[in-house]
Length: 506
Image 1: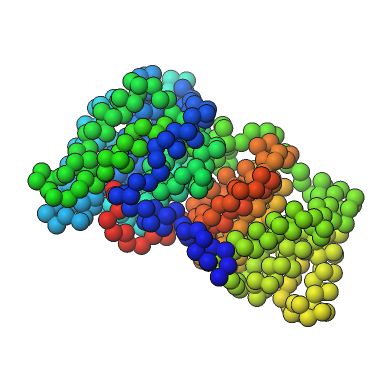
Image 2: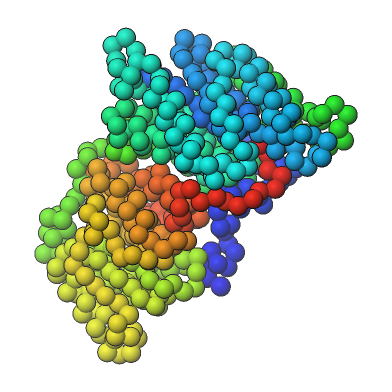
């Protein structure tokens, strides 16, 4: 077996979570404390209204509770929205009735809101454990709530900025991830309507099943919440309100608490971490810096005018090893149709043809297209490839419908391409690529980690835009090489349910 198919990596964050029962120790708090110690401290713009969108009662405390306490002490308005009542947290206990538990958990959240000083949460009442199946309705609800936020004295309702706090998009719990997707889509809608929105995502369950060494949660680009004793004390006081989760409940139950003591201690002692997420068509401060301009087609033509092989694809040991890592990362042994935009002179294209029945490569520079086509013809002549297996076209990605790749690709390989695309169009191009791909397709992205024009944090910062695309779920991240970042994603419908889940903490 090859790469992910050989079992080297869990296939998704939800599988990673499922493989790490809460009874297990999980990652030690000290590990996260060390990783978070030198992170910059989070600051929420004081002109913004703050909304918390979470899946279950207690998430609004266990994720951002200390930050919420800090904002309230500054006199800021913070509105919690809780999407489900968490009434399946005791599905293992036949004596517990879901409706009764739901009311208990709502009351616990009301008490926690009192402890933190926020208004009573808004409860949306969607079915616990099934939020992915109700995502469109959740999005509509959230958009309605955000649109109803009143304007400040010098701002209109439609321009009052909003900071939206929600679950990290790969937290592992299907409900958490569904709410995160809904938050991103609602935020994108508001941004498109001209309303400024900042999106911050926080981990809960990733602190248990992930670690800085494994690297699923992008701690390297997170911001840290305050660790001041008064704020930590306020968070602990609010967390203590959730007796149905942290004690043997109902009274006299022989079952262990849903939230084991070591899990709670980690959530209450590790610094809160927040990842700023770019919301198209704008960006969140902290996600991107540098100029909006990128090196475009004229720049690429100049490179090929100066050299037939400007990146030394044919001779560089570095490029050879990067191609090998790309091929090793492919989750399947064989694909039907591979699409490679920006295929350059066709070196990786030829390698991909060994793993796919058909390969379509696009390259916008005419001289590079001629070189790639010549390479493929040579491989056909010597019998390495069949006559119609690979097609090289002089085309470039854009937001136009017919410039988003072929329909039905089950593999998309995007290597050193995204930072050449217009930043204002990047999110829309990625969305279009995903929409045209086959269900369950894999997308492999490989990009230079050092500064490039328009991406002063590194070309690999373009992967942040991939992470905001609801049709993509990350399967694998390899940041082991100092010069490039390699990630593998699955293309899926943003509303696809993860299927029934048993005994997941709510």
